Structure formats: C-alpha cells, structure tokens
Length: 263
Ligand SMILES: [Zn+2]
Image 1 (cartoon, protein in one colour):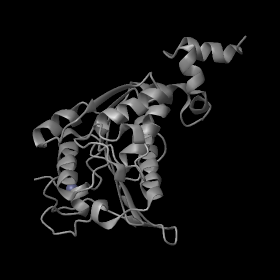
Image 2: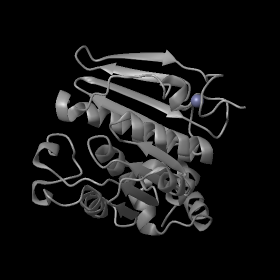
Image 3: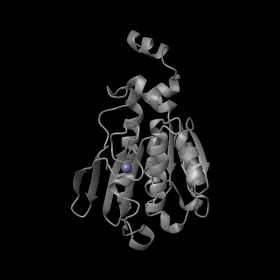
Image 4: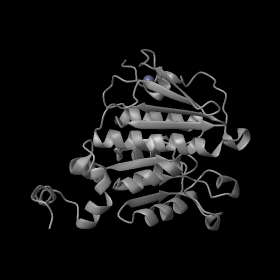
C-alpha cells in the first residue's frame, strides 16, 4: 500500500511502476521529482562522438532516463580505444562505435530509444539532426567539427554541452543559444584563428580524464533538460589533473562573433 500522496502523484504522471522504481532516486530529489524525470523521459539528446567523452555521456544519459538518444560516430571500435572508451568491449572490437554504443545502452536501459548513426555529419545533416534535439553534446575531437556543431546549435537555438580532454587536461563549457545572451563556441575560439590541433591519437590521454569531463557533460545536459539550477553557460571550466586543480573563466558573448553576433 503506497502512501496517499505517492498515489496522488502517480495518478497524474505517465510513468509505469517499473519506471517509478528505476528512476526513484531521481524522483526523491527536490530538484528533479516526477516532473523533472518526465522532462528527461520526453527529451531527445544528440550525442556526437561515441568515443572517450561520448561513452560516459551516453551511459549516464541512458541510465538517467533521457527518452531518446541519437549516437553519431563514423568510426569502428579499435583496441586502442578500450583504455578509456567504456561504452565498448573487447568482444566488439571492429564493430561500428555507434552500434556498439547502442548495444551497451540497451543493456543498461531498454526503455531508452537509441538511434545509432554510423556517419560523419556534414553541415546540412548536422542542421537536420540538431533541429530535432532537446540538447546536443559535442564529444568530438577536432575544431572543424566543433565549429560545425556550434553553428548548427546557434541556428536552431538548441543548447550545446561541449567537452574536451587531452593528456591530463580537460575543458567543459555550455553554450545556450536559447537566450541569445550567452557566448557560443566561436565567441571563445574564433574560427579564423589558428589553434594547435591536438588529438589523443598523437598526444595520448589519461583514461579518467574523459570520464570526468564526459560525466560532467552528462550532468550539465540533464540539468538543462530538467531546468535545474544554473548551467555553466558563460563559464569555461578547465581541469589540470596533474594537480587536480580546476579553473573557472568567465566568458562573454563576442560582439564580433561571426556565428552568433546580431547583424
Ligand atoms: Zn558567438
């Protein structure tokens, strides 16, 4: 016999008994509750990259009950990935990462609809994918793709959670184009400036770095979807894992930004 107030809550919500149990530790939180969990279940997250960052991102979004997850990656699982890309397994080496990820998520939470796309999305395709998303998670590893994702998110006014990890350094930021008041990725990293392109295939990466940053990306995405607290928008968070020191830098919308400045 459930207490009356629980019965009353349950009558007005659309979750079944299994879902109420599965998500009970979220429902107990004042910040989430039944209303917040229903927002998560109704959401569609677009996760671009099913590698080191995409692994914890996808695992936490699925376990937390994001209703639909689109996982985009054109690569196959390689033995060198398994040191940090926890979505994948030794048995799935050689399989497409998007499909390997879909299998991992289905095992954790079969109630989540996972769309696995083995493709490298160009601008037109990104625009199409972003337009259907509640939140976008950039889990890629190169500036060109990051800028393309940012443009698509600014145009569609969809919030973007961006993460990066290399060697023992990590970065995290939220770009929320819904308000029009916060910086976008191109405000911080102008597309015409040359940045040193560093990738873990050449520089290496400390395995838990992608776990720390990816898990925080998932947390920011869940907060954005459920409307909890304050997002990281207008701040860039940087981690130096050698000393385990965080730095937080205030950022602002650039009036000269080629992507988001009003003409
Ligand atoms: Zn901008």
